Amino acid sequence: HNVYGASRYNPLFSNQPQFVVLKKSSSAPILSIFRCSSVMHSIVSLELDDDCILPDIFNEDGLFFRELIHLTHIRITLFRFKHSICLLNQLGSQLCSLAVNIMFVSLQDASIVSKIKSILCPNLKQLAITIYRTIRDYETLVLALQRLSNVEYLTLLLAIDCEEIRPHHFIDGFDLEDDIISYMPHLRQFHFHIRSILKDASHAELDTIRQSFVKQQQSIDFPIDYFDNNYGQCQIYSLPFIGTRLDFISNRFPLFDTNKTFSMVTNLVLFDDVQPFESDFFERLSRALPHLRTLDVVNELEQQENMKATTNNLEFTHLTTLILFDIHLDYAKQLLCRTHLP
Image 1: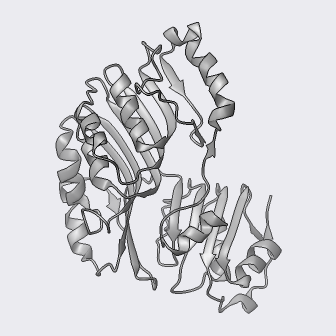
Image 2 (image 1 turned 45 degrees about the vertical axis):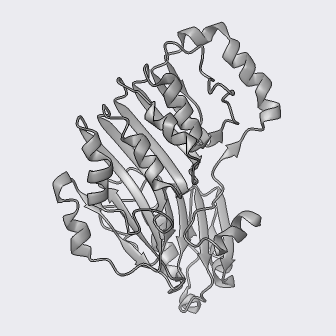
């Protein structure tokens, strides 16, 4: 309840449960055995479950992977952004590929800047960063990316609060070029989905945003939405769409395009305070997102066409989690009484 109550004070900020956090007290003995194992010396690639966050694994000296002297590839989920900086400082000279999920990027203390400036990753060619919990310190994140000048393949899946600090506007192609791309001269491929959130957002010029991506010469889209809660958001993404999660999707988002752009999405948060989600919306949704596993609905507006619904063939074959919080009763009836769930 506390997690979702927070969404009322931070509209459009994702609080959906996503991770399993290992308790340090119970996981420490296992991790200690793992760290001291003789097999550590021979490990070249290490991949952990994306949805499982390790506890604070770094010692006071910032070391955890002390024995992994041959490690070149790692996929891991970390609790805080500073932990990823510790990892890069420790393994930067040997890493060739890094995929990291980060739970929180909050306003940082000044000490992290000096740690970022000491990052040296001459062999890092592939980098993927996923942060679906809203980033409140865009500049610090960008500063870290600017240290990774040899990256050739970059994937960024981010949600950014643009209100408290720079850039104070929706992220566009100019920001990506000036803050990231220009610092990566060897970049060959850039996949991204960046959702930027802005309070009291003025209506952006679509042509201006479109022109901001001309230099990149790649297919993109950038749906913009404005809500009655005085917040706006812009989602910029490269095509084909490579993410598996969409947050705060309204009736106005191009979810049902003929190209089936979002057919691989497994995690969806629906939100609209302008108009209700009608019955036919969910029928189209079940067809457009056949792999959907988690559905979160936030809408307190009464359906206007609910009495017209005569079919009970709505089906979400793979749905395992349904979250109904701050909704009108119509949505509970629609999804619990007129829907086939696994």
